[in-house]
Amino acid sequence: MSSMVDPRSPMETPEPEGRQRLYRVRGIVLRRRDLGEADRIVTLLTAERGKLRLVAKGSRRTSSKLAGHLEPFCATRLLVARTRGLDIISQAEMLESFSHLRERESAIAIAGYLAELVDALVPEDERHEAVYDLLFAAYQLINDGGDERLVSHIGEMGLMRVLGYRPELSRCIVCGRDIEAEINGFSVEGGVVCPNCLVGRPDARPISVNALKMLRLIDRGEIQRLLSLRIPADVATEVGDHLARYITRQAGRDSAARRVVAELRLE
Ligand SMILES: [Zn+2]
Image 1 (cartoon, helix red, strand yellow):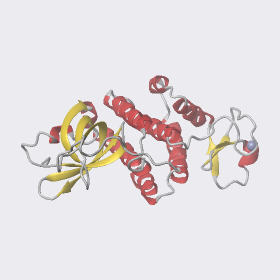
Image 2 (cartoon, rainbow, N blue to C red):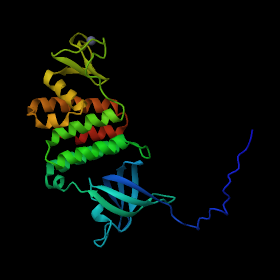
Image 3 (tube, rainbow, N blue to C red):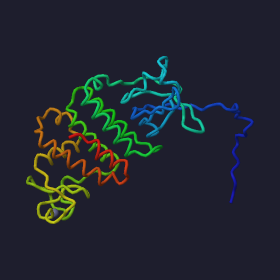
Image 4 (cartoon, rainbow, N blue to C red):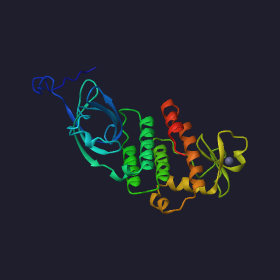
């Protein structure tokens, strides 16, 4: 075995004792909690480093320069100092405040639900840039006045897709035959089930033609088309029920996600 010697000796790359190393991230604030007298721990989903818990020192003081850039659901650009414990936010600069989102209780509720879902489903220190993009897009849609319940389903389905739990929507997951425009089944084990295979499967429930159409539009990312449609309330409710059961089964194997889906889902 040959051994490699690092050509840079410590003498040539001096690093002053205690110097903090800095890094930059873009993040969306998922939640915050108080720490000590004046600080907060802020949980963010970042584009570069996945979910991070960071300390915002002094951010509960009225004089804080950080606080305004770390409101819930904000997208913000951060300069972060690495420490032995939780890293510390050194600077914060708002990228997008989604200010209209904050004007409606229903919008805040949906934004909060999506934030909790992301928090429950995305592990810490695992990079998920697609989830950041998805959450940013969902908040943008809500901010622009999009139907909030529809946006929440777009967010749910998008999360399933980018986290690797995308349901099959074209072929029966049992026999493989193409799904036709009739009442089929939707199974929490993986997607659509044809009428023949639906019989005697407790994991599947009937799904209407319109609900399956809506799921497919969401899955294909035809967001503008969806937002321009008048979706009957019963179809939206049906889609919501299927998605909630699916998420609980597929991604909700840990208790946090199951709790979020069960308790926070809005009727
Ligand atoms: Zn079948």
